[in-house]
Length: 177
Image (cartoon, rainbow, N blue to C red; front, side, top):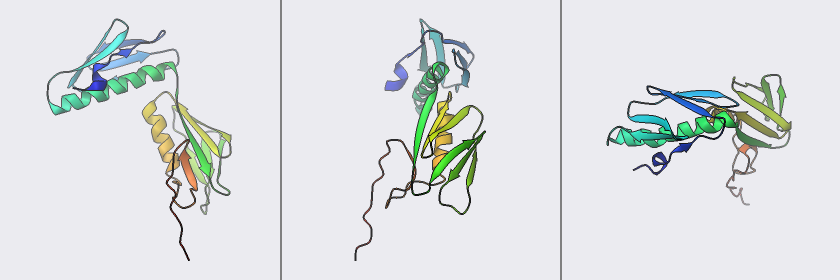
């Protein structure tokens, strides 16, 4: 049994949900999002909560049960307030700045990296060594943060690169004479 799937998703004040077939639409003060679930689960709205139940005992139904419940919970949270992912840049001369809808990254490469920010996500650079990725879609926010991080992943010797805020990088010992 899915421990996550069993829990109902509470609807906070100002958030409404409607189900039509396998599609759930969540409307909140900040955003309106929808999700189409697979035929392995059923979604019901009632008593200020959304419940997800499997339609069978198959392995796929049990897998979809917990995942669907988590996606619905993210829709409800995202319609009320945005998701946020913070990145920090470490390295001599490594910095970032926003110019319109383009993130300009200086990462020690032979060229500057111009990262086009997709629609639905906002990226801000409060400091030249900090980035904040925000949006109402958790999957999109995480993917954009991962794409930015992929330009210069933290290396294990000096720790230079782009890392998530609070991420621990295991430091290796260098060469010995």
